[in-house]
Image 1 (cartoon, rainbow, N blue to C red):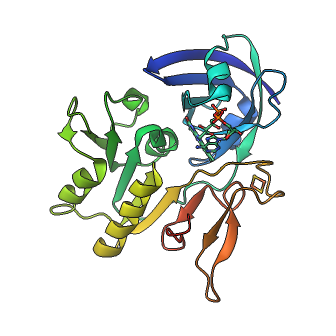
Image 2 (cartoon, rainbow, N blue to C red):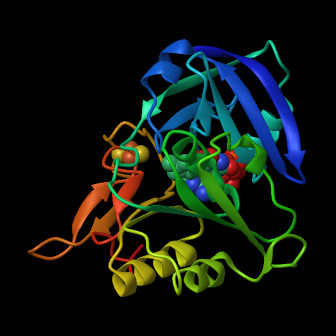
Length: 249
Ligand SMILES: Cc1cc2nc3c(=O)[nH]c(=O)nc-3n(C[C@H](O)[C@H](O)[C@H](O)COP(=O)(O)OP(=O)(O)OC[C@H]3O[C@@H](n4cnc5c(N)ncnc54)[C@H](O)[C@@H]3O)c2cc1C
Ligand code: FES
């Protein structure tokens, strides 16, 4: 489906925010779902997956890092031009009861913004290497935001797991939502086990069809009779952390 670009601006060093007009996607989307984007250039037939970072019922936002050729082309696209998107795709975050913590690392913030804007209240722990970005997209006054930066330029100096673990000395959460590097998500799972919290995280894998047919994006999950394979595009990208086998992810 062709969607018109309303806005596409750099918000930090290599981070861009794009807003696309698509009432259908905006109204059907749930936090944690993604869109599959066809980069507008000949020769690039593989679509790129991006989390829906927010919606206002008429448009969706994508917060993206320029990583390779596809995202570089995206960063040069101008308002009023169109992009072909498919979505919303995948299984998003479940609604969980109780006190909520949200843990994000780097561009993993993208799906968590949408989640944070839809829940009543919670604490958000965000980690960045350098200058934080995208925090202004969180509109919910019920979210208490705490920041860690590796270079100490903002908030706690160190990684977001240290910040979250220190908070767990005094605070109790019943559930945790996470997105970020796999090493970070693995640590969130450890903390879920230690503090009796239920955890869900959004995972990234390279994708082909993003419709559940090609199995390119499979990851192993725990099952009674050994590992079973799940498709990140269709069964995820959000999985319960108790199911995920990290040694193999
Ligand atoms: C469910 C999901 C949600 C995502 N949400 C976001 C987001 O909100 N913001 C953001 O910046 N990035 C997100 N990513 C990662 C994003 O898809 C890649 O950074 C992007 O595809 C890179 O494309 P490229 O052409 O610039 O890079 P290249 O390295 O040139 O890409 C080459 C190929 O590898 C694939 N690829 C490369 N890196 C990744 C990756 N990390 N995950 C999946 N495929 C990859 C590309 O899609 C492309 O097919 C998400 C990935 C997934 C799976
Ligand atoms: S990308 Fe084809 S099954 Fe997931």
